[in-house]
Length: 275
Image (tube, rainbow, N blue to C red):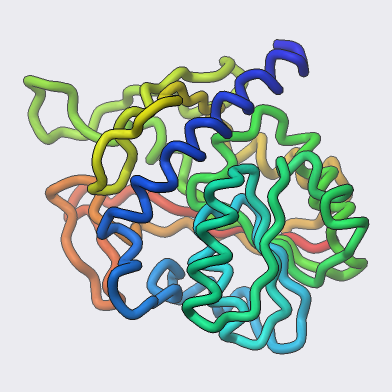
C-alpha cells in the first residue's frame, strides 16, 4: 500500500475520532462527570518504570482527551499532549483547564510531530493503550520517536497486547463466551476496516464519519522498528490486567483493574526503550 493510500486512511481515522469525541465526552467511561482521576488509567508498574517525572519534559503521543497527560503534569512534569483530532485537542484543553493542570496540547499527526513541536526534544515520550493500531508504518514512527527524544531519553510504550487484539472485542451474535482468535496476531496483512459507529465507551452512536482503519502490529515488529531506529530496549513486561472489563467474565483485581479468571493470557505490555 502506498503512502498516499496510508494518508487517505489516516484522514478517515482522523474524521472518525473527531466524530467520536463528543460521544466520549458524554459517556461515563472517562469519568469526566466526576472528580478527575487520571491515574486510574495507569498500571502500578508504569510508575515504577517511568521513575521520577518532576521537572522533566514529557510528551504524550496520540493523547485523545488528554486524561493521562494530566497525570504527568500532576507529578511535576512539563507535559505536552499531541493528537491528530482537532475535536479531541479542543476537549483536552478544556478538561485540563477545569482540572487546573498545566498541560500544552498540540494538534498534529504523529508522523508530523517533529515539525509541529518545532524540533523540541523530550526526556520521556509516552504512548499506547490503543494508539499503535492507527499507525500504518512503525519504522517511520520509530524514527520520529528517536528524533523527539534527547540523548538518554526514554520511550515508554504501554499497549494492548497483540493477542488481545487478535481475540477481538466480543463474541459474534449467537456465539458463547469463549475467546476465539478472530484477527491476525502478526502485522503486515494490511489495514482492517472497522465500522466505527459504536466505540468502546457507553456513549451513543457516532454521527457522521464512521469508517475506521487499524493495522495489527506484532511485538516483534514493534521491537525491530525501535532497534532499527537506534533505540535500546531496556525492559519488556506482559500483564494480564486491563483498566476496564472488556469481557463480561472479567473480575476486579486489588488495584481496581480487570483480569480474566481463566485462561490467564497477556492483555497488555509495557516496553521501555532509551535513545
